[in-house]
Length: 93
Image (cartoon, rainbow, N blue to C red):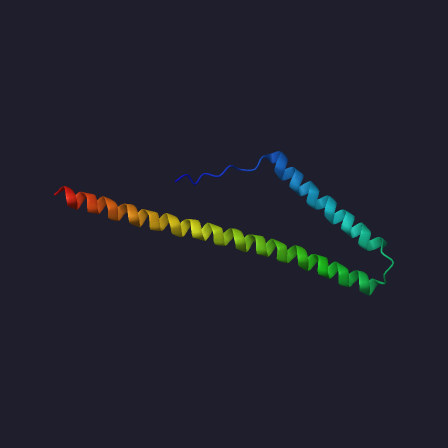
């Protein structure tokens, strides 16, 4: 079982940061230009920030669950391999 992962290139990481920054800037500019009073803009800004925060939390939770499942499978595979080696050793006697 091959568990090696390819790291993202520095170009991809830079693109991701620049894209996020550009999206955040355009959203902030659009919010600032909206013909709303300060309370309406504040409410929308709070919703946007909470949406970004919960998206990050959800992504991290899904990744952590996948990593946990992978670790559990590794442990189960190691136990199975140990049992097979022990069985083969006993059957040779």
